[in-house]
Length: 347
Length: 228
Ligand SMILES: Nc1ncnc2c1ncn2[C@@H]1O[C@H](COP(=O)(O)OP(=O)(O)OP(=O)(O)O)[C@@H](O)[C@H]1O
Ligand SMILES: [Mg+2]
Image (cartoon, rainbow over all chains, first blue to last red; front, side, top):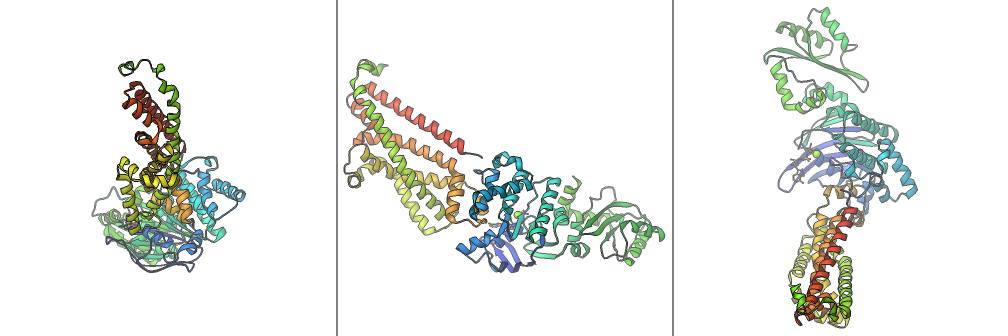
């Protein structure tokens, strides 16, 4: 279990990177931490590992505070943590295979067993044919995969990943995330994934926390956070493409169908609206199955304000979240929160 | 060959047959022995400097400053002064202050701090992230120094060692002029004091060749171990 209580980190020079972080991550959970650039995500993970020490507060992994223990105790504690770095940090003087073998060398695993494990891991990350390549001869994504294999080599109890997939294409990202989930299912490891890609959270995480200016603004099980429309995180997690062909003042209904609604599925929504005579064209929409539950987000574009209000009333009755707004407001939100993500997902 | 003409043909100069081979060997021995000592002592000193420094594994700012000043003093004393002032120490170490063996002592004392600084600089170039990644594997400081810092900086360290050896060659020549033997002594005793232009020329050419070979070898080694 990972536990943070009132963690503060003030860098010499006065930058407060973490400002009272409280977070509990139970064993076997895959926990996503999202937040804007500079929110303190890397700092948080560095404090977790004892690479940096918190100014105040306590951080423990399985009861051990890595910022406080020293020497042999710290070394032992770190061997049960695998870490994937934002900047990969492979050793240029070692081949891919030797980089992956490194934690095993340190743990004193005999050469034959080491070789077997490294071959297995290379296979796992799809780089069996690049075992003898040096990092300089690998692409960014390949390096990242070597970094992930290296983090997993010593079968850690906890896997900490700082932007593990930011250099990977969609297919490889999916493979890596599947791999992480599978490892969790098989070995019961606890995983923390720092990411700015909401897709990673949707696909891999059981729970998610939003870090804003050094403190946790929202944390919870993924489905709960998505269903909670009172915070922007919900909209960010299930993003829609930007509105292009609407006048700023035009009325729009924002709809979110979650596991909590009484609709059998998102398709039922349209027949329901038709029955009530309040139909509207769809401006944009996305439907996803997350952890077995169907989640749908729609932007409907009714002709007039009365229809909009009608739609809202019908849907709210069914436990569906619906909100009447304007194109301008939706655009403003997007500009503020999800510009980067929407771009990524359009690609 | 205006210089050579004053003394007749190169081949008639008996210094060439009698003294040149020995002088070449002396220069090589002097450089090799000093190089070995400098590598053995300068490398650890460089590693210590880096790791005591602000970005090292065990920063100790006071100790760092003291060691740093000592190293700079060692580097800034003119070699000729160092050589003369070290005579008692040299006598104590090798029993004499003359000959190439004796020259090794001041040469080493001068070159160790020089090389140590170059090592420190090479280690500083190693990305802190690499050190952190290996720390996270639960590695000891000893392991990090050997397998990460030195190994990753090795191309730079080899480059620094080459620079040190090349500098040493020119210092061996200076040492030669004051009783250290080698090509420098030959150039000084015959080329300068006895106006043998051809001896002087031969010594200079040989020194240039030795330097070129060293530099070429150093570059090659550095390139083979550099996988960046
Ligand atoms: N060593 C440091 N010294 C001083 N300030 C720092 C240091 N490291 C980080 N900061 C500051 O702390 C804040 C949080 O940085 P951090 O690297 O944790 O952000 P992040 O959430 O990981 O961002 P990104 O998504 O861009 O990686 C930033 O304002 C940064 O400038
Ligand atoms: Mg970061």
